[in-house]
Image (cartoon, rainbow, N blue to C red; front, side, top):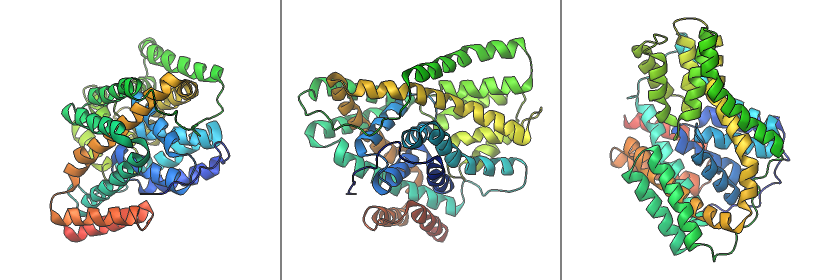
Length: 401
């Protein structure tokens, strides 16, 4: 298993450092939100030591509870911890811009992408299997040790597989918290987490107030002041605020917002969705594509910017608003026991995702399995950079195809 060295002190980085690190991931992180969590762990826990396993598991557990894109929220939290508010913006910008720009270019007809059946794209799905498997392997070594925690992880995986919706995910985490309080209270308290951004409680409360004010007020403003830009911002802000589970779960909400209204045709919507599978980074950048192909203006780059900011703004407000209180709560013995159960449940969530959808979408035969094993070996044993493994898997997928 991957040895984790002591983390560097939190808040001691620079926004530029954060931006460069996340830009590299934004260019290479294929495989969807669960795979992104694996990439983040490899890069910021195992390689750069910006935070330890406990802090990373805390952050993942928190973002699973929040609505919006979980992997992007984890990235925002990492940037916030490393370099404050500017670091949070830098992390989001680096991770989001590559796919957003690619999808806008696709929307404008500058660049065409291959279909979902492309052999190289299948290789990227195989790479995701290895990335997620390594994340499960490494996190289980510290978050699901012992009989009780291992059982909680497996039970959480079973719940998520039996109820493959956001309800199942939230239910598994809630059951983990309850089981932790009941079964893990006698365990020694976890070591102090390095997840501690210096955000004042007053500012955090203000962010939460803005979140709820926009959620309630934007529909009223859109009705009182009819205009396409405000209507777009309202629709995409609500999508980012009300979707639990992130990723593909947001697509039905977006389709209901833009297709019946006539903003985007259904054919254009589906074409963009296909293109979104072929680019790295968060799937929520699909909003940039939709903003670019809108029928009524603003569209193009201006429409893309409006929709992109609107769908991610709730994530910023929630992470900044909740994280300082999460840290205070974590220090209480009752919360520590609950958090131990939640961390074990998070391992179970990753384990379930490794099977469905990651494994089921990627492993179609013995050759696929062999490539996935080789990729896992490169990541876990040879310590090959994830981006290099992604490239090799894409090549292998092309050869197999």
